[in-house]
Image 1 (tube, one colour):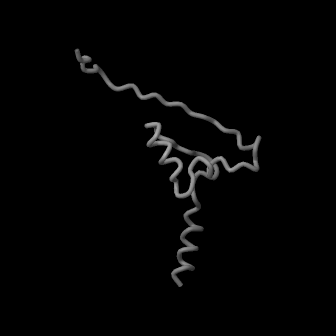
Image 2: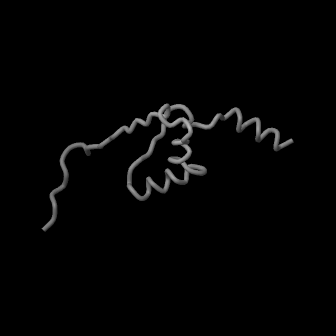
Image 3: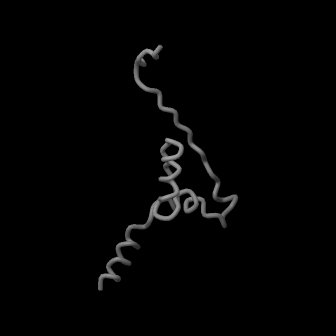
Length: 75
């Protein structure tokens, strides 16, 4: 016995989790979730089959800082 083919568009479940960094200013939530070079987030995505997106302050590296460091290292 097999299941029938699904009808219509697939349903995508989404849940947003808000974390108040003001309550724990000494804790680096973004760093803990992403891990070194994003490896922790990638591992969590593989194990759970979900997509992890971190938004807000501290979620992106300052590209200008990285560029200036790379430029200094090249000289």
